[in-house]
Length: 136
Image (cartoon, rainbow, N blue to C red; front, side):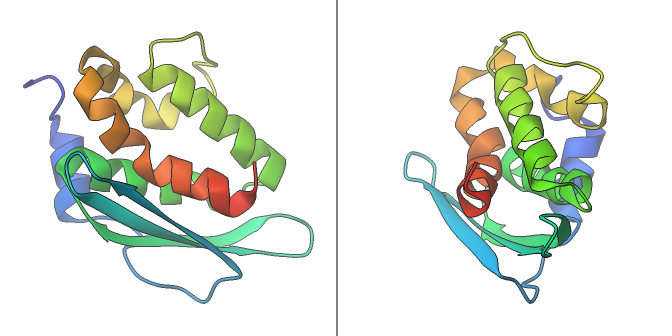
């Protein structure tokens, strides 16, 4: 478990990026009834389909909050199609499936979640909410 809770995960959990409600035109909620984690993702997408801003609110374990935090960081300024591709690759990474390693270099610290199946839902909660908000 020590390898799972890296310093970066603990830091992002204690000091999450973009942890607020922003003016938005898309949003979605996610809940994990098994552990009680919950998240709401807020997205502002412009007319060209670019994510101009993204944030989240919620409560949950360190992995859930850290994953949501880094998600908001890497998704800013992404085109919707690119964001959907990134999300699909992220899901593959945490499930130990074949994925684009170069694309996911900024979130690679979450790869160890794949060794702990009970934590996959924690790591993917915000990503599922974003996928729903974007209509991927």
